[in-house]
Length: 127
Ligand SMILES: [Zn+2]
Image (cartoon, rainbow, N blue to C red; front, side, top):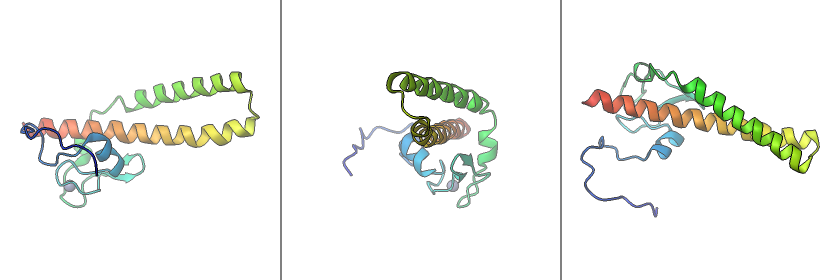
């Protein structure tokens, strides 16, 4: 593990000290750090199975999720069209490549966004 731990003055942070991308990838609960945040690849659990944190109520208000997904899909479609113009690959090659890429990118973006939102809400609740 070569990641730096940063300066020791992190008093404003909640106790876990987990970086957001790592929390999003592993689905770490903001309170106890268990891998319980996601019930499905891109769907939050209703509550943490380990500590009982009410994730559902923290998620409330995350209305921009749909907008983020739409924007991302739009960008990917435009990118796909650009590549088609440029390389003119056979259609099966396009589908083979862009299908998984789109699904993966959307799922990761949703995970990242939802994790960011839940952590933000959780910190607000601590004040
Ligand atoms: Zn928990």
